[in-house]
Image (cartoon, rainbow, N blue to C red; front, side, top):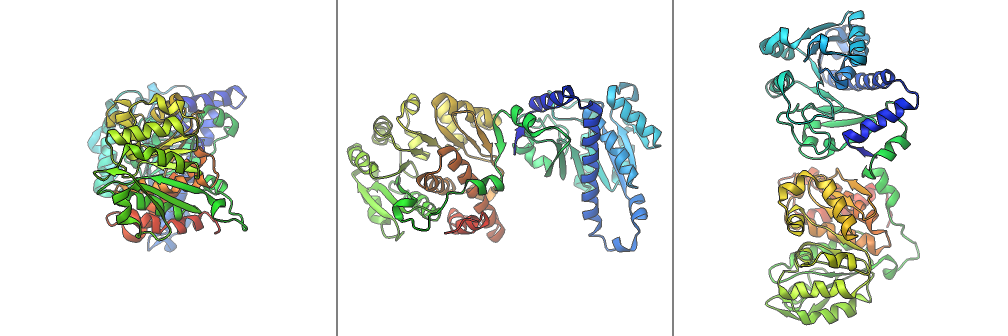
Length: 534
């Protein structure tokens, strides 16, 4: 499913209009879909009322009050047109204009005139004042936010700022339900940031495709349940303007699942090697290894410091462990030769979980980048051990790196806040510059390829913010690459599966009680959810 910026959405609109679709028809389609979605939500709410079956449809709708808050831009035009559709369904609709009537122009003015023609009641905010509007909102059964659209620049100001505060007040105090048109007012459609103040919506109906601000945080928290509706813009127009960014969905996950040959053997399903673990960090390699085994790997080898290997060798019966020369519990520089020799037998090397970071590990990671050519996954301390980023683009093979925001900040010498404020561009630019694939972890994980393709992920839960969660992801993605999947697709699928296992774990144990091992335990359920067969 494609994801658009406000700018690219505007281009989609313009190209559609230039192809012969009148602008007012696009707005009419958006309004009709908004009204249909609102009606669906209201029906769901009314079905929970004890006296629902005691009311006729006509009486039910007449007694249901909808207040639509309208701005002077096209978002407001959508709201005005939706008001007509909802009134035609029998709802008691009232419109509140944030601007003066004379400020309306073009098709927005035309839709206002049509509302007058149909005898819809309206108020201007300047005539109501805050106290009267607050009372009106408190007596409403449902609120529709059509104040500001996706193209907001700078901070929310004037009447809109005051109205947003009043909407949020009745949401908090009275539990009112709010539907936002296209995006909650005050949310930046590009990066999901709050422009000083934003509507806290329960639902958002968005036109043609997801907007980035609905998927990135904090915008995602303000959007609530998002419904993407078709307003007549062709898919090829949307695809052309999406800048290769898509939302990874269950259908894509199902289409990418690696096949399982009935006559396959251990070698068929991948021989993967983990370079991981150091003194005090024996859990990380076990989590990665077990996650790989739970994700279809045929053979999993663990190359780790000798004293670590002695302590964990028997904790995972299916694991094949190889002790490496070490010093103070961390692999020694002289272990490089054995790592290079053993990697020749593997389909993939994944380095980093719990590895430790000192001069020895830095030299080992450098030696790996300078001498190997098999697919390489670099995570955690393997990333922290890189002292020359140019080694990445010189590598004679494909690389996947899996940084969290802190690791990405170190690699680019930026703050974590800077990374999170511009996650998509930072991941895409890094992938292109250094010719790698990247999973930039965190809320709304971004997976990017060197050729410009990128995915946003929506699965997951805050319970996954726990020690070892990233090690599990490394195991999943390594298993998929080892089974022959292209690295970018394997990365996107692994992120989805990782998040989905977290969701299942949270459902069963709660976000508060989730630990990384729970994700591994539920991986078989996720694979079954995606209809994979073992």
